[in-house]
Amino acid sequence: RLLVNTQNGDRVPTNDVSQETAPSTCLNVICIMPLSSRDVSVALEKRDRLHWCMVRVIVCSLWRSKLASTTLKSVQRNDHSNALYFVFEDGVIIHLGEADFVTKLASKHHAAPSEYQILTALVQEIQENKPLEYDGNWSKKKLARGLVKNVVNNSPVPVSSTIGVESGASNEIVSQFYGKDMEVSGSSVNSVDHGILMIVDAASPRGHKEAKCKARKIYRELLSASRKLDIPTIEQSLVQGGCQDWEAASIVALQHFCYQNRVFASQCQSKASSSGTKRKHPT
Image (cartoon, rainbow, N blue to C red; front, side, top):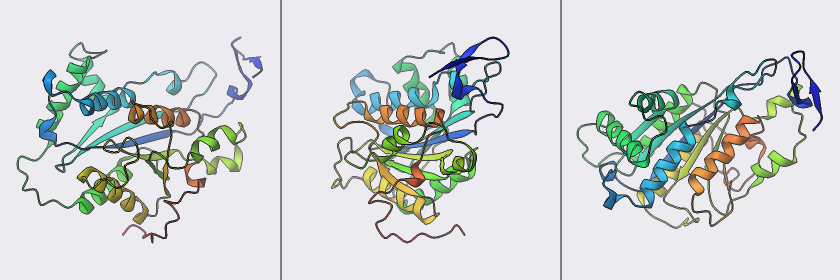
């Protein structure tokens, strides 16, 4: 891209020179973990792949460079925020706020925390926020509907699309990112999604669609709850198959699309969004 001089003498790419601030974006991530909240532990002998996955998801969601969300002199950049929700198979939901969780660890001199320190903070969040008693008779459908409505109501940017991460699904959203005209302005800006709900099922890293575990059922109920709120809902593959770190890598990829204001999820067509499921408007 060509570089031009700004009034301050800085040389920036031509498509970055604008008097208008790019629209704010928000990525709301729901990550379903196929383990009980009681099984989250800091003990080294209990730290399996799922514990490593949670740490990676937390780091990639909540610890971000400020470059993409900071106004640099005359160059206006979009304001982006993330929100992370963990759903455990015993029905416990933990919300980790981008500012609160990072600030809490930083106040303990853990600005660049280790795996142990992150898990310790997560265990503390679970102990402080989950109900004291569970009888095991909670409804997955009710949980999904309540959580999706909560995300929609609390998102700083209106949620305009839901993306379920599914290995083996279409990667049209990636093609749209690279294939659309680089300049998105005027009336065409309405085709871009600024508020996104991302649903990640850590139980199915390689597309085991037949899995009958609780986590998989919660994933399906979350997609259904999104459709019933009339939110365009699709399933997409964001990284190549076989990626060991696919959960965190998918979050990083979609976050990058948000930074560039180039998420065209509501325009994508997939079997999931055209399966014939009837949509209902919120009541």
